[in-house]
Image (cartoon, rainbow, N blue to C red):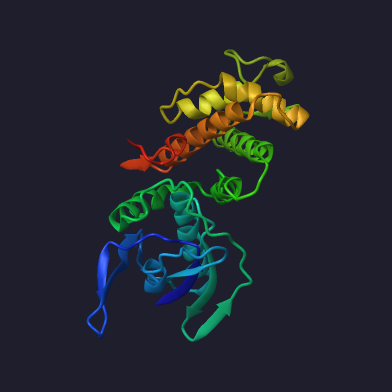
Length: 292
């Protein structure tokens, strides 16, 4: 059994654990992820603590059956942490591993956050269903679509104290990354500094084929997952922030656009990963749910 300790995840379980003193805690999630049998156990003192500790908080133990090597176990746990980071919008990270008498501790960095999670993490059955549904696609696409990097950037956007223009700039980098990896994954050729749409019949000189703009690629990327959001205001603000670093728009307008970008990226990632079920809407302060 491969075991690990992780930090900064504040969800509850889907099953109860009973203790010798007669007490109990809803702190267990048991699931099957591909060939692995996984159990998450939350630290009861975290669930019972009304003060909500801040910073780097040791929250969870993970057990994984079906692992053959130490490196395989680390990879599985890290993938689970990235998916929990996406679900909770907190920087979930492993800091200790144990397997067959060997142990390894990491100098881990991460910030616990409880601002606007993607899923209702206080319902363990939702988290269990999410992990089991998205696991195959995440493992398949994580390298080609750079999903760990995207999730890292998305949670970094939410760190407290960042200037809004920095948050927006990071969000536009996320969109740039997603459309770039989409183009490569889809086989769209990159010629002379641009992704290009090959005409039919193709031109002899590929450099004369149509250049695909940020808007073109983003539209194609979202349409591939059945999405048709309005992109004009995102494109306009992206050009302003990327080229000038600041925006002349009022703060309220920037917040509205930042929230909208979150809605688009969060829904896209869930669709890409094959999730079905309810999720929380960022722009509605996570007080409203939508269903995929």
